[in-house]
Image (cartoon, rainbow, N blue to C red; front, side, top):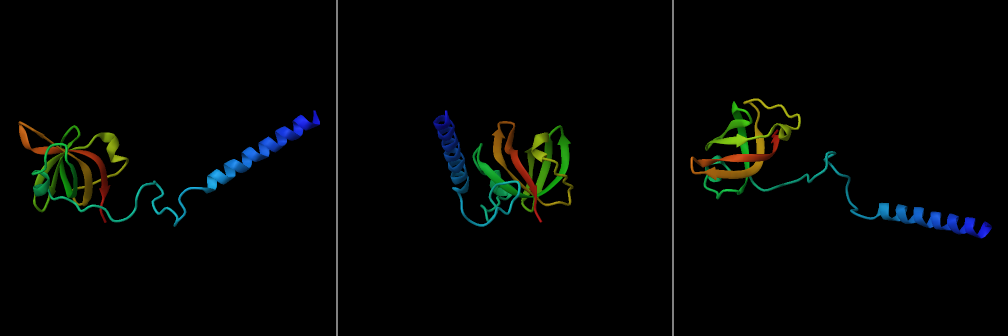
Length: 131
């Protein structure tokens, strides 16, 4: 009985030490800057509206500019120095972010073109304010 107890105790200690060892493995480097997770640092350059409307449908686009007005439901008019395009932003994509026409935003999404709208609509996957 004592042997069984000691064996279980040793097995338990080995399991705990293995977990501690595994928890210390992984990325070793500076602390994460973004508390919400994800990459912090330089990224790809932003497209202009003029460039974006020349892309093929389903192309990834990054836009910087202003949302100037709501077009109803979840559609918005976006503009930058080169033109305007329609954005489709689902309610949950806002993530509590409040934006006015005076705010500069960065939009990441996919361009969708249609026979009736050759300029396209950007299906927004991510929106953030730019300082």
